[in-house]
Image 1: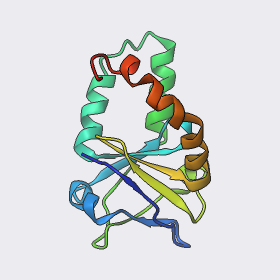
Image 2: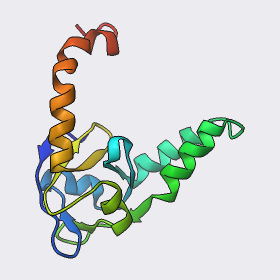
Image 3: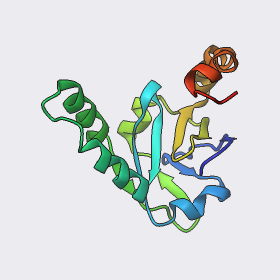
Image 4: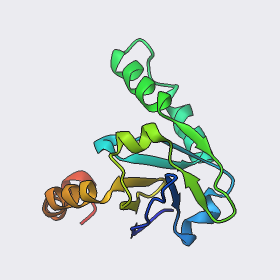
Length: 143
């Protein structure tokens, strides 16, 4: 499970080092793709394969399904981190997420998200207050 918030920096070649606590889960490979709210979603390879299997059950006759799959899969890149736990974030994903040197990596349970730090700070400021007020409505029986 991926938890926490980390602030690694992209180097001049667009490489990022994942926090040490995540490296074992990603060592055998990962998939990066476009995420919602213009972040990059990072899945361990096996988790992405499971997600893809679920998505394949959606009706291909539904335009929303086709649109979602096209955007998700056309932006996907499979990567194996190097021995230092570094990955190169492809330029099209850096552009999509508006990544510069400063970025924020958040654990989202089964996946990670890579955000530009200013975008993450804005998102959190806009959504943090609502988080406390809606927990019971979003997850029935939570509180």
